[in-house]
Amino acid sequence: MIFQKLKVYLQPIFEILRWNKPTGRIILLIPACWSLWLTPNDQPDYQTVFKIIIGGLFVSGLGCIANDIWDKDIDKKVLRTRNRPLASDKIDIKFAFSLLFLLLFLSFLITLSLPEEGRYLSLFLAFLALPLILIYPSSKRWFKFPQLILSICWGFAVLIPWAAHEGNIFNPVLLCCWLATVLWTFGFDTIYALADKDYDLKIGVNSSAITLGALTKNSVHFCYFGTCLFIGICGIINQLDMVFWIILLIVALLMQKDINKVFKSKEINLKKISNHFKNQAIYGGLILGALIIA
Image (cartoon, rainbow, N blue to C red; front, side, top):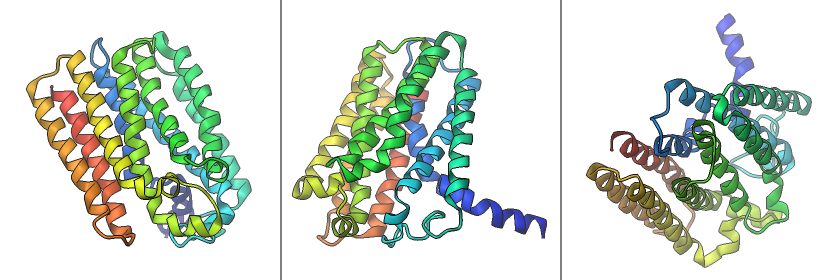
């Protein structure tokens, strides 16, 4: 009985943090780990990796809360989002803000616990990222490519782990890893935006899927090509083994093939979009595995 009551209480909290949907959290943490395993110095210690993962969960959670606060009224009008905790009144707005500030505080503590060499640079980058994370959900109202702002937010998931491990961010490998992450995020989130395209048009909000129109498919092809290209440049600079190149080539082909599946018919297929998003987490994980073993 106690566990049942606890589950009922915690379920809307997990939902507003999206912790009940692990794919979205994994797909954020993967580039962070790319960054750590591409650093030129020693391999990252597991304590740092653990802190980056926990910090990533906190930051992604507060980003989701900010999104739901901004979009509470819009979410009520969209089939895919109308059952979100704020839109369905499972959680009130005051509790949502309290949870957001709690996660901000916990994220701050995690950043302060990072290795001393890169602690203050990581903290500086975190403060730079915060305004973007908080305003991103509003960007669909005033910017034609809101997914670009999300991609830049995602890019901080690469910069902060590198800074924590290396104490600097001036490195061509990091630049390429950042570009790969931004392109990858823009690509898969543009496809994800297709799910809400009709609703967004009716409501009058923007997305890259709407703005790009007929160019959407080719734009995502370009993004995924660029992702693998820049990860490949990282591999060249770091002189990675042949196994890395085999896995990267397979992933590059699978990414391109997945785009064609989504656009096989003119009608929007929510299941194909969902599968595409899940597959990107798998492909990103394969790249990470290649970086670890190469």
